[in-house]
Image 1 (tube, helix red, strand yellow):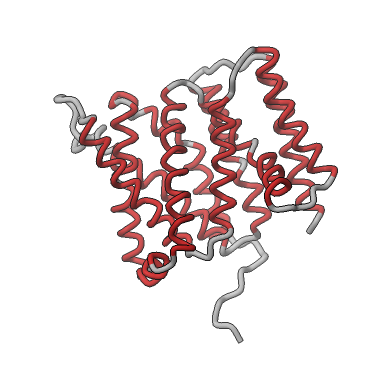
Image 2: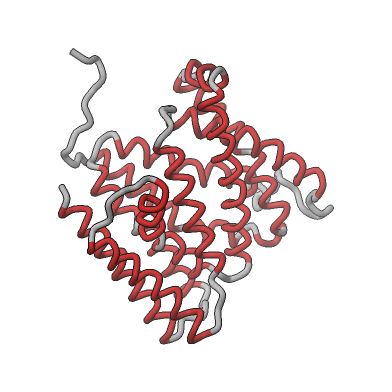
Length: 294
């Protein structure tokens, strides 16, 4: 008989609390990073990358998970994909922070709504997965939403599309790696540490700015703020059904979307509304089709 505890299919209060806390933090990222805008994109990005590894190092020490780190370093089959996901995270972080500073928060939220469509296409093209008619409809609606922005507004929503696509690739790689989540997350922060160190050295804070000031503390804490929801999400996944947790996840980009429109007054025209309705409809069909298979 296995010593590993079975994952409960019931929803308990603790697991739901973990999941909702993760979602609230994810959705509030624009509010947080807007407060760091005075330091400039390059400095904020550098500090976010730099401080991630020390925080994850502390997490590993508390979890006593060093054995998993050693096992990955001994296996090229595991180490190379982790390094690849680390580079994806580096690009995503840069685009996300830049998108917030560039008043493209609504577009960033769109990218995460597109993840199901990208997941379906990725499974079909590279993993020979069978795609149902409902899933094809979901893809068609999502693509139509993006096309509406391009055709009627002449917009190029490359930022949202890139965020959605890279997140899909990242998830596909990590899903197939038998690496403990905390261990994988720590290893991903190792290359980021050196990238961040270079940025911090090359683009130092101005003379009247300090990381030890009240506002300056937002810079190192940004690593904690962005990694904490991932850890909470993982803990929630061990206490509640993944189907429900995956559905709740889409509350995060919804929060981001509402912040962009209501708090920062980003442009949201009738065409934007039509485009998002198409994308949201595709997401709804995707989630319905997933539950119908269970």
